Image (cartoon, rainbow, N blue to C red):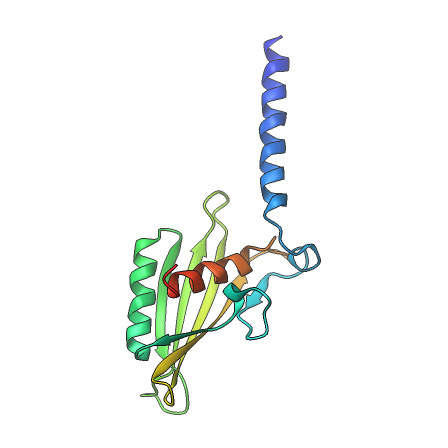
Length: 153
């Protein structure tokens, strides 16, 4: 009798986990076949569009660093200048995000570009899974989490 109860509990837990994963899938045609997502100005969801922030490239980089230091899923890897000159104001920031349960690591590359005419910074980003053919929507969720944090939400 106890064996059947244990089996029923195990099956119930397994079904709950599978249901939780399936309910997180936003775009069935994309999430099973792609393991990369990028911010796009034409994206339907505002959280998947590039972000324009007031301030300098260094101030935005510092904001991202502070945010990653307060969120245990995110890690700051590196920051490098990009562009034609090594002293360019453009920056590339490499981050990682680790999923809590399965500990999968996604690589996030953030590009910061000054917009001199508006004294602001354009933030674009790409999130890529290290393994797997599909990401079940995790890479778009990574980008939404990043853009929400940058917008102060």
